[in-house]
Image (tube, rainbow, N blue to C red; front, side):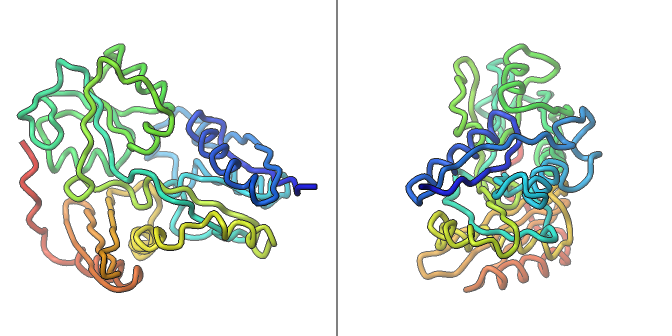
Amino acid sequence: MNRVFRIATRASDLALWQARWVAERLRPLGVDPRLVEVTTAGDASTAPVAELGVGVFVKAVQEAVLEGRADLAVHSFKDLPAAPAHGLELAAVPERAAAHDVLLLRPPAHDPDGGMLRAAAGARIGTGAVRRVAQLAALRPDVAPVPLRGNVPTRVARLRAGDAFDGLLLAAAGLDRLGLDLTGLVRVDLDPVAWLPAPAQGALALEIRRGDPLGDVLTDVHDVRGFAPIAAERGLLALLDAGCQLALGAHAVREPGGAVVLDAWFEGRRTRGRHPSPEGAAQLAFEGLDRPRAERPEVAR
């Protein structure tokens, strides 16, 4: 008989998609997965995300595992604070989806000559992320960020309705995973080196109680080779001793020769670290952030 594994997850459409995706990869490993839906502080509040503090979308999910109501937590890795939770361990990070951001625009706000964002001057861009607001200010000061909360389908529906904004910044991974109908909207996929995404964006993090034998099962869903760039991005986050609500963008790749190259953007400064190890790439990028403001790429209008 297969062992029952209870998977703690938020109840949003995207979180449930992610948990079910993990569940389907566990079934062939002799696991009978069951979902345990959890409401987090971030889900229950209507306040701007930047005001809610670190870990608001993960703490309640982690508590379900720590208290024995679930065996495994599935998170969007970018939502996890840099510091590990006491009593839990990161057991696996499956293959990553797209890491970059997408700008969705209503056609009147689309300008093919509008630089990287392809957005018309004066466009109102909906986002609740500190990082995205900061990059908009630096790269396109002629557009206006508009505070925004809500799950992905709700945000897209509001954009269609022209409700207070003309464009919407989202993670490509969430948009693609849900497979939403974007008919009538303009999708602009943003270069992750020119417009830096959140550290570990597009990746999932699977947490268990420290020492749980379930970790042996989860090694089969861990993407060993693909983890190095994610580790570099998260390593930089840890060196900054910060949470997910930070004006930090990071994107790493592994070169054919094995070196990890990490590009980062922090409060207007760009930096790059290249090293054979993720830790080394993160350290070099961190040291680069103390230098004078770097030249930013010619991507603004």
